[in-house]
Image 1 (cartoon, one colour):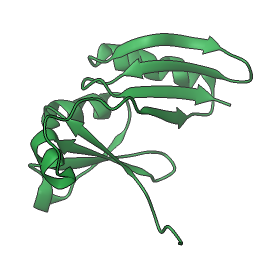
Image 2 (cartoon, rainbow, N blue to C red; image 1 turned 90 degrees about the horizontal axis):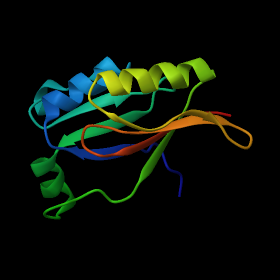
Image 3 (tube, one colour; image 1 turned 135 degrees about the vertical axis):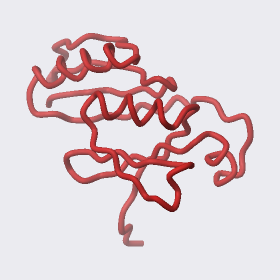
Length: 126
């Protein structure tokens, strides 16, 4: 099989609040007028898309109900330790929760945060 593309779909409680959060921490918001009431895309620097989907729509599409966090950790690579620190500051100022400040580990520098819906993100420089 040749996979043409892939992306993440994250259920969110409040689509407008999530759009604001991700915009404030530096992501580019992608909008499609046909589904503006149900979902938004956030674009990474390498042109990958993470879809933010209103929880009821997510449950409808995924054919599940009462979905909760599934323990996924989303890792994002940046170029410099300063970018890790700056992003973590923006996360905190925008209502997210920093779980680990920028720290040097074995072979990389990184930090950990939760977005406003509890999704876990690992921001690293390798």
